[in-house]
Picture 1 (tube, rainbow over the protein chains, first blue to last red):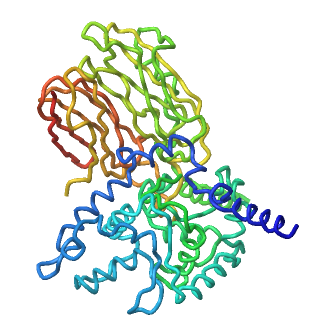
Picture 2: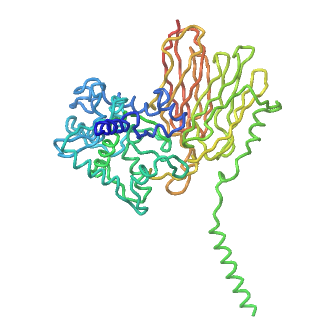
Picture 3: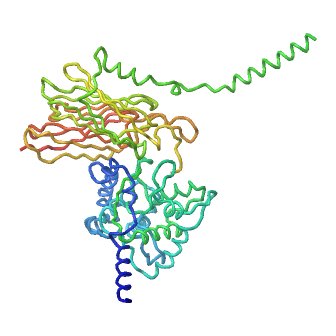
Length: 252
Length: 157
Length: 107
């Protein structure tokens, strides 16, 4: 009897794994025409940024500095990297996201000044590096140093913010699948950033999207690269663990 | 008595002048663009517009009016003797009626043109094809747009 | 500075085959209707004309309007008959002019 109950429990548990996974990418919430834009690299406008990223990768930023290729070889050598970000940075002793990591690389190893948030060239490099992980499962490292940051990120995800006093969880968990101003509310898995967003008619980072959300609830947005934003992004990566990287995605 | 009336008249004139200065002149673009039917008629000229042969493909419900995939196909052998020379697409309710025009010839092989357009609101779109024999064929689609293009102020998004 | 472009068509084609050509160019296509932060419309700045020439002969032309979305995408077909060059030209407001050339191999 107990054995039967244990077997049934195991079966029930496995139903929560891959076939019964209740998680949905925002890709599923889009119409077929927009999905077609993402599926085909000849139709995905984000590839304009990936192409620029390739050019930047090969170019030394100054006479005395190496290009990205000088240290890393081909962009494909970074396969799997984007899938495990945000990750721990030893020097700063805190997690950083991919965008910050690329900029830190430029500062530390190429002697370049920091780029501002949403700098077009930074987006191009982030797109190029993210593309190398396309199709791989999101897999932030199980680094114990990240654990308190993941927990704080989850707290931020569930915290009511702004004059409208709404939390991420209220829309993206409780009301996912519903509608906001006529548009479907996705679960908010950050699987495809940087994205080409139809609303922007351009490419942007997760930070830009979260800034839009936070402004929307009349909250002061987290600063780009800030520890709060990175913790939220880290929680989102933990929440989406196992889902495939879609970078660069197209979204409405 | 006459002094009071003239000073009140002066006051009223001054008030009227002040009000006139505050009137906002409507910019030219706020005037209505010509009706869709007018543009269709202009394209067709003396030719009758026939429904058929042209297929205009757009999602009935678009994800976002800022970027809407659109495709026009026309049944045509595309030979020197029988081909589509021009395609025009017009809209009903954007700030202006043109969407795009395409020029083709026998070297096209097939008529299958696609682009991405902006739609300010739910409206009708019409695609017209002029054949080398002068005949004009058309197709139209009604599209529902929730998140609109064209008319919103730039926001911090 | 040339605008970024994505140009895709089969590198080789069979003689007589109608091949699909897809092009995208990075351009904001400022419609002229969008109000700026001061409430006044941002002036129009769009691409107006696209032409594709195959060994010098125009095989496809497009007139674009403010209703074309940013980073304009065009897809069309042409019959491959002999090897040569495809030339893509964009023209627009504020004197915008850009030409890209790509080889086409026809077997």
